[in-house]
Image (cartoon, rainbow, N blue to C red):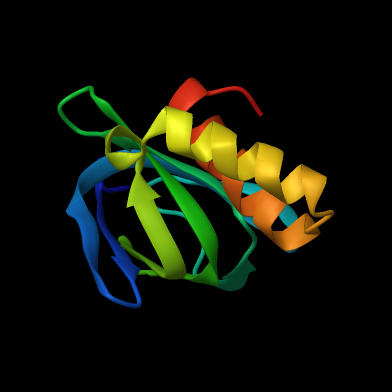
Length: 125
């Protein structure tokens, strides 16, 4: 079994992150999934949620992902997201304001997007 997998996290407008990892955790329509080197091939639909990438150098990369697809084969993992942003790119105060506004307007989709952004930054699910 290989000790690492190659990960590509791509949003509709840009490449968000690319590199080698030992574990990726993402939320699919079937629930949360962890992918490690040697995992069985898969194709799934991503739900909005944080994606956690444990890199081979021991660091952790977290991104807020809003919809898309996940594909894994031959130790290559592709996360093709409608919208994705790394946790360190997220403005927490702006996300909190967006959450408050979405709650006030009863906009469930906007509330979920803001909530996912905050989960990516805080690590709280």
